[in-house]
Length: 250
Image (cartoon, rainbow, N blue to C red):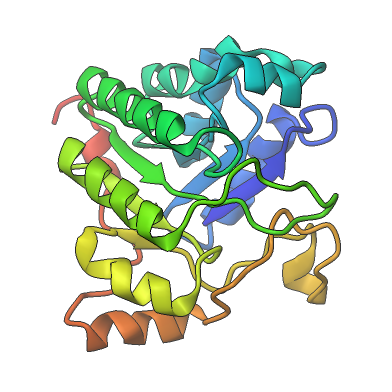
């Protein structure tokens, strides 16, 4: 289960998240967060509440472009965001997911530095699984247009390159992509796929698309994705670890 709040610590801060995680944790084995960057103590509180995974995209590794896109507010601090996955590793999170928004800046540069970032995290925090996402810019509220278009061919090359660089990393492909493309990228080393996703606030309860973070392309349910995996000779796995792996005695 992934809990997403966006950059809103004033309305959904650490206390709020702690309560939410403790509630959700009673219904599922694994809880991850995609929220605002925290300090080490904040991430330790998340771990204590039951969080085992973090997703935090740098968005772009180009500092000048980052400052242009985030000119003010807490999110404008490029270095603080860049170092957040490292702070999460120090706090003991089991899984850390990074990535850049492909199309936001120069995609070759961003994928290159995503790979270096992942390699650094994997070497420093060997007990933590590093995952890489490949989110291409999609239509979203506000009408923002990407600075470059990333083709299917380029996306495939990026996936292959990071699989070679990080053979043990998890590679994630979201419902941003079409069903046909996701199906055919599976053999290249994709280890995690979302399904039944909704990116609009409250969308799971009222079927609304208002305010959605990005448009979904693959509309298949989790059951349909599980059946696809079986038909391709893979095992659909919902949880592949146990809390005992986090024990200092291991």
